[in-house]
Length: 228
Image (cartoon, rainbow, N blue to C red; front, side):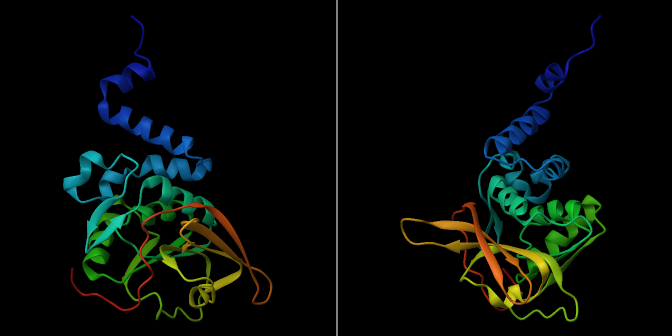
């Protein structure tokens, strides 16, 4: 008797079939980085979403995560991380932990991740999820990124899950030479929101490049929130 094929196994397992379709959609949307694709396979989004959305977490849609916040579609998260190209042994700063989903992807790609979340309930929930997932090279802090000072440490990469006014000088100052910062910039009514990557060149110069469209990102907000 012939052994079942991978297609047969996937057909008998709806969860496996959904995972395959999820990965195919990401590839169709232009995600090509193999390290990132493997990280996406290892970290099901459903593990980082509120339980009531577990059945739709595999779709490429934004989902509410509490505190008036949403988790962007996975294709947008993946596009931003691909633009960031986290260094394998480098330090990454994430601004806006949210559910911890993007944090889990970053932690699989970089040497060390520090994730800042201004909403205390989200920070606590994300930290618990990341611990349960078994990641040991990531730390979540309840902190205001716009007042955060890691001196003397600096970061090789910074990912901001928010719309910023260019140039985001406060955050750019935390980059090492050659480091990259990825965030969303709101364009005009005809342009819409765009993912932008800034690279720190020798001295204080920065080179900016657009990396695709984004939508519905909230502005980066100062201050702390202790509750929902």
